[in-house]
Length: 434
Image (cartoon, rainbow, N blue to C red):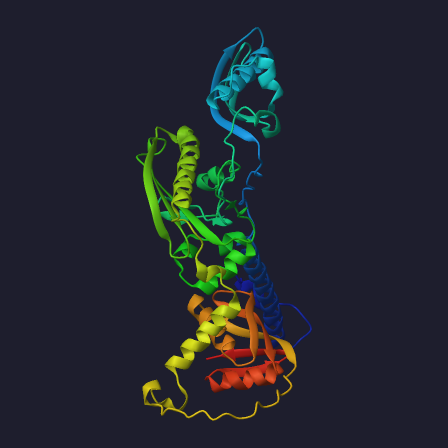
């Protein structure tokens, strides 16, 4: 809000005009210029707010999945003559401990070090003669795979979009800010898991599409539009609810694994952290336990893709057409009341040439997901429509769909008017409203 103050001295304006009238004309010009500046400032502020919805300090790039073998959470505390020597000795100690956790055979430290591709530093403190750290060790699968690791074929899941929902302080969030639950999933090394996780970055427009409210939507058409943007077949929704006893004090976490467009429940567990410093470690362990729940569900056959999300659009169009024919028969008479028809053999008529196929852009208001479903169902139900899909989705505004139809826009417009839609054309596109 911009505040402006006009002084009474504005009345005392000197000029060559006729007294008081010329002075007031000058005052009006000054006021109009000030108001114009205020309007421009408000417009600039409004544009900034629109841009700020998709910009800002958000988004965490997930770790790239690799086939290497990783062991995390190894704590070392080593002393030596210098800090550098203590650090090097701590890394060697971590490599031996990681090899032991993997169940590898007894080998010299030099042989184990030759199979290590990298050391991941979680936390470290380097002193003059002491080194304290929490490390992770990654072994090359090409070198260490012959000694450790399970062999044989592994059943892999279809690509699953991850929507990590965090409930903390009475607020649900996903990618609106950089949250600890999002970071735990981004840093999870999923190469050893049979679940094919698709982890969004969460920056830009992804924070507007993937929200906590998205998990409660049931529209298959809506979900198909979202999943197609990430080349995923279904969705996994891991919930984390954090309750703090007091600022800086203990934290109680409740974690729930859900999946699919119906938000189906899989399992839940609880964990505790003594302070904020231990929160990251608790969430890392929670992600591993959550992965275990999804693993078990995949092995038991419970975690599977929803056929309504993967079925082609033509199959759904035929199903909608059959349902519409049964519910709304021609003439308004019930199906049972229609007299039986006697079919007499006739010569097969010659096939008429089909109308040319055109691609038409259709604009329609989309205040909510139900409006999107209704518009798509209406357009797909028009005879001659071969395909219809949204190319621009704007909830609360105007969305656009691309329609492939026989006969062009005139035939499509006439059929939609017959369904009760108001159709206007212009600029090579149609606009439909109720």
